[in-house]
Length: 467
Image (tube, rainbow, N blue to C red; front, side, top):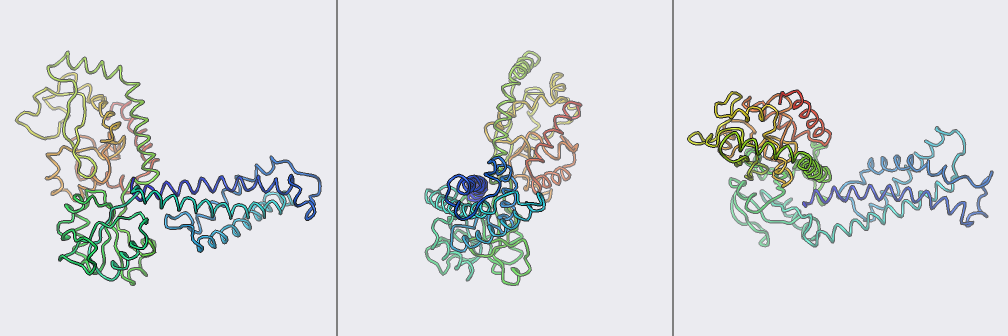
């Protein structure tokens, strides 16, 4: 689990806690006002005690308003913590949420439907509990980081006053979630003898892989633009987040591209996709769906395996080395659709639709995509995902990466059984440039909804026999 994933999990927990706190605050405020007897001498409710069910109906409205207010005031950011400034920000948020709730109730009911005392008490209880909840999660985050979980291994490219300031901040906050591995620079040595010199920027890809770096912070303009472009190009095929520490002028013009890390402004050029809570959900979907598919399809897969063995010599399962996320090779499983000696004296090459090496059964399997069923094992193992760029044969990667611009960008995510390019007709021996463009679109615009759309389009294509 990296730092970003932990941040997303804690944000999700914060939202869940906030919902529970607001709901509980309404119920407790109702009890204090109408059941405890503590406020009878201060305010009398005309018409008797209202039913609790009326206040249960109030909870969804309050929850929506409160969550929208907290999000608008940026109180769900990973860097927000349980400091005094955060408490005052919560005070501001609760005041706005209270006014917004009272206004909404006025326009909805046009009369005094709810006790003002309940609203005030619920606001006070929520404020205290929201702050305490954030304090608990903040301490929990520090404890997790102290155990080495959720740590992002980082390195600086270049060295100047801003990097020096960043390093001092990291030393003051040992549980910040970042582990400083070292510095990449044009020449060895820095003013900080405690920071390790890793190597030169020309060797950035090897340094990222050797030191298992998750994040790079580039100091601009200490690092020339040409070098930044070279770093971006070299790291295109590895899942490393790249940020720039900008000058003041760049910060002013940066707009929404600027984020803050430990109070230091950074310009984020590229984000590692499919991380955080949504990335975990994607993996859970892969596990559940592939496990269910293997269970349901096991009789069919056994029948296909027996048919392959009976109709042609050779093993039923074909294994081939493919390249997945971050350039990591793995063995892909498929039902053999060609002769057992199909790759002898041929090497790595794409199969054609009328390939003479196919068996008669293999043609049928490929037409209905039945040859790809064993890839559910790859998904279950974690080598692949249900949806993603199709994995390429290892022997073709070098030539493709040299001839096709941004080809290695496909390796930033796990390969998939199906993908955005495939459901748009780019399957098999089709334009590689177009497939790369579709794969890049998928990576940059990924969402769980897009995955579901691709799966449904794939099932429809299989039903029609066009996949």
